[in-house]
Image 1 (cartoon, rainbow, N blue to C red):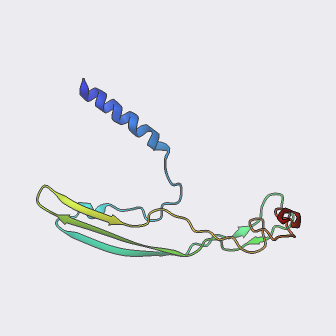
Image 2 (cartoon, helix red, strand yellow):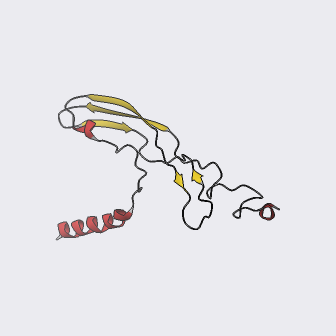
Image 3 (spheres, helix red, strand yellow):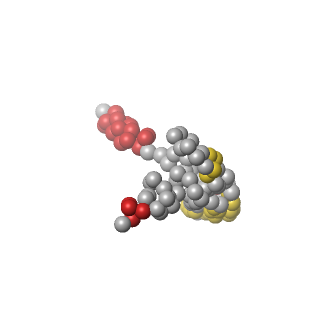
Length: 127
């Protein structure tokens, strides 16, 4: 009977976590394959990304101005270490930066206000 209660408790405890995720912010995938390698194991790496996110204004904008590249370049290092202490026990460490986002809006478009000239932030809004 206790096993049934324990199983039910474990299922109920994991239900709230099903909706928690970082949508589209996962940068690395955070591989755990190092832990499955035989014996002692070490790996290190670096990833460099240069995304290009640009476009035009949409919706009711009469000007339909260009929106320049808003995604900045970024890099992230990663490392994994696994030590096989004995036949029954392993110790491992993972290092990476799995989540993040880096955006920079610039130029003359709906995302960037020009004080005194845009409807989003007029001169009276700063007084």
